[in-house]
Image (cartoon, rainbow, N blue to C red):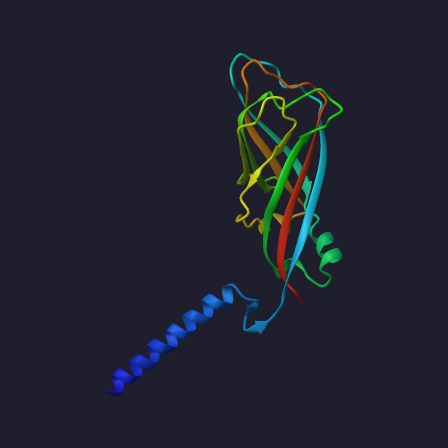
Length: 196
């Protein structure tokens, strides 16, 4: 009888512990110390002019366009969440992404085939993470509003001063891009972090 009572008590304690652990993962409790959380928005706007053209070919060809972004996470935390450091970060997730061809040129996105994919990765690294896609680019379009995977946690990329940002697409047959085309990239990320 004692064994049955002990086993029941142990099962109840285990279930209670498991339930508490599940609750902790969605609350503001960590390491048995109560902490609040804060959400910090990060907005980037980057302007880049591609001096080279993309020639018109009768076949579709793959094109990767890579750029580098300063992460600026320390600056953002100091401005919007004083006292919060990188070690307090729970996640950093992308929220929105838009690429626009500057209106001062006649260039459109007609040189891009049906889809564009966006990858982010460590500066100088080889592994990149797919964070956004866009299918069905309309003729004459100058703006791409991407479908962003908001579940991707890319906080590890922000531990370095820079990260890389790559657009991958195929060219449309018999369509090219003019030299000196200017792209404006606007990205929003969200940091969730424990407050001190």
